[in-house]
Amino acid sequence: MALITYEQKQSILMLYKTHTAKEIAILLGVPYVYVNQVISGSGIHKASNHRIDFDKIREDCLNGFTDIDYLKNKYKCSATTVKIALSGIKRPRTRSKQTSDIIQAIRQMSFTNETMSSIAKRFGVSRQYVFKLKEKIEKEKEN
Image (cartoon, rainbow, N blue to C red; front, side):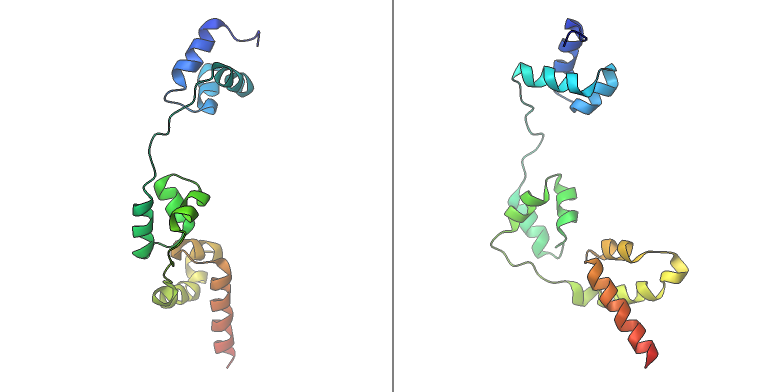
């Protein structure tokens, strides 16, 4: 720790209120390891910027936003937190509403240069589901 001056330690602790350790390392030009050592050695903990409202997550889910990745990005939390919030409620399936839109997107793939994965992500369904629909379309073409 001899590579960090007292002023740099104070700057790290002051910046930690509003920045992440990685951002501080970049801002001060100090190795990330040293920033973490200063923060952990000080005994301070960053307070969470927000509290997650489980009721809002449940409400969004019941309104059709069932994709865990979408919810975790919207509420800036982990997938585990979203799953805990949704425990005990049955997530509605929205595939039937979107199936025709997904099929249309699959048929237009060659024109739009969109991938199967991006279609799955856009509609909030699994890639396997999109691949199943594509196979179904190809079988219909053969018949």
